[in-house]
Image 1 (cartoon, rainbow, N blue to C red):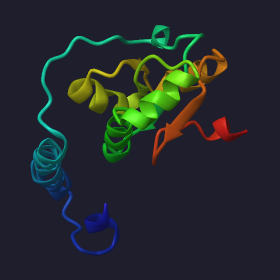
Image 2 (cartoon, helix red, strand yellow):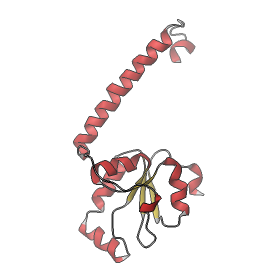
Image 3 (cartoon, rainbow, N blue to C red):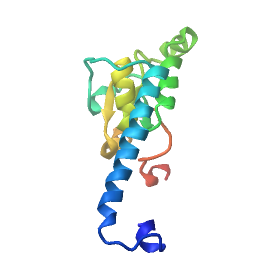
Image 4 (tube, one colour):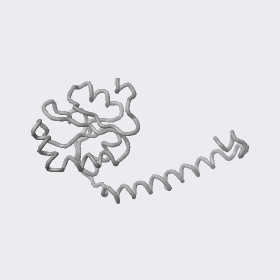
Length: 149
């Protein structure tokens, strides 16, 4: 769009070519490098059996949902829940398992830690209205803006 609107190039045949170049640069130059770096930092994912959907929220347990897109937040949360002091504190108030994921963060912690998935982007409000969610920890995107109200 910059090429055709800002006087850089008015050739009508160029946008598809430039679009393909951008897609390759972003997909292979950005996403592939990021995938490699995530695997180095957090470990290479392996196939795991997982539990998925709102049924992973248990009424008689402490349910913390990690939700968003940045892999650092769910990785830190997954590490923290393995700390013996945190486990003891959680057990004292009824927690018997790890947190659950939602949206893209859910995929990150499922494929690397086997942590259950509560749902996708569209289920975030449903997870809260179940009354079983004690907290939803979010990062940068795909959170419904009305949730804070």
